[in-house]
Amino acid sequence: MTVLSYIGLGSNLGDSQQILVEAVQKLAALGPVKVSKLYQSPPMGPQDQPHYVNAVAQLETALAPLELLDILQGFEQEAGRVRLRHWGERTLDLDLLLYGEKNIQNERLTVPHVGIMERDFVVVPLLDLDATLQIQGQCLQALALVQQSTLTVLADSSWVNFDL
Ligand code: ROI
Image 1: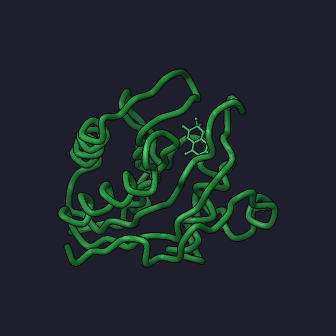
Image 2: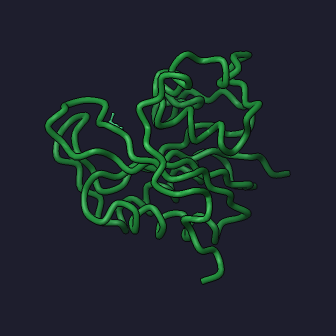
């Protein structure tokens, strides 16, 4: 039994686009992966930090949520994850946004991810992957922040080469 999981990717330190490419290539070793377009996004949080590069990946997986979380945290460490301050700049963030239709709440993990509906840098790329996506009965497409998006498209969904 597999589920479709959605993973948010963000970086604003180092060569952010290359860091996201390498993260998605590692995800692709776990199972079938699709990616959203690649976006640039103004920082949510302190404004005196660089813009973020953001995307979302869809991973079809048989891994349990906490197994997947462990792997994502391993990938963050391998990318030399640096986090300078709360809501500040970071080398690589991999957030487990959605795991099928499941609601999960424990000490390590909240799914759907907290704040998902308020973040255009999550909602807009999710809609690239599934334009009909609903979260707890709410159509993402209908959210005001989709129309008022602050994102800039850096590349269409061909920004990762999966043939390596
Ligand atoms: N802001 C943007 N634009 N993109 C992110 O990925 C991001 N990640 C974060 C905080 C610091 C909340 N701000 C962000 O963790």
